[in-house]
Amino acid sequence: MEETLKHYPVIIEIPVAWGDMDAFGHVNNVVFHRYFESSRVAYLEKIELWKYMKKSNIGPILKSSRCSYKIPLTYPDTLSVASRIISIETDRFLMEHMLYSHKLKKIAAEGDGIIVIYDYSNNTKAPVPDHIRENISKLDKL
Image (tube, rainbow, N blue to C red; front, side):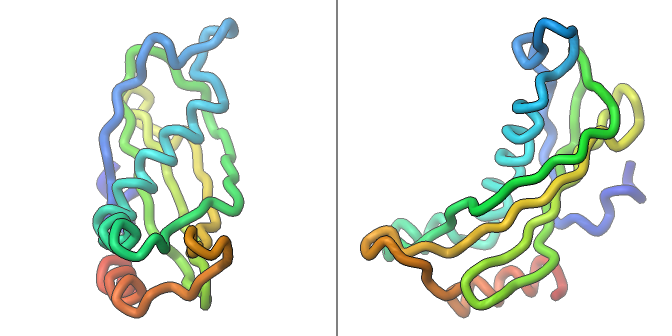
């Protein structure tokens, strides 16, 4: 696992809950997006975007999310969910996710999401703040 996820600066561990499974006996496809979301939130905490949003009302909004399912997951299992930013534009960045199953010792899913910086006071896009851009560059060596 270490080799697979070594280029991801944020990795969280999530246990698979019994309730994550559906009638087909595997983790429901929607739940994979929640796993990615949890890792994305941890990343945004690390770059202090939530802190910035609290004082400015400018923060992230998810534009799109994609998941490529590799193998089905079942309870019990523990997952490592990793996130990194692979590109930054004026008002958005592209975040990549990887989901690793400890039980199966394989990548279970890969995905990505486009995060737009949004001014919630004025209901419009906003540029990525310079200090957030710097925090991303330090964390992801961009």
